[in-house]
Image 1 (cartoon, one colour):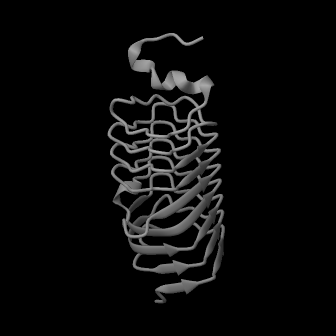
Image 2: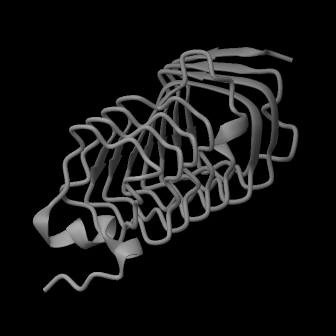
Length: 189
């Protein structure tokens, strides 16, 4: 069985539980593929793009994501915290990431654009210079995170406790600043 794939395009494939295990994909594109049944082990994605793919519920415990872009993917309840941390680089555009976990990851410079990010676990995550561009962060948890220079300016529904999260030079909009004051029971009009 081949274990290295370079510049291959995959379309509308439903992957089985162990189908991609111990394989490496470089400069590959995945369109309309379903990975929700996968229990990834020893999989490497380098410079890959996923378009309109389904990952909800997939177990990506032993996956290397190195310069990977996800466009319009559904990725609910995915635990990114167990991914290979060496050169972990991901970008998300128009994705549904609700209930996923980034706990303790270093995702400096990651971009989240037009994403649903309800109840995401960012606890103890390094969010330095992360861009949250027009994202719904309702009930996402940021305790003990480092969000220095992070940009929340166009995002909404976040509640972040500045006493528990490092926010030096982070950017927020005046309209959503109430998300930083929630614990003080202050009304902002």
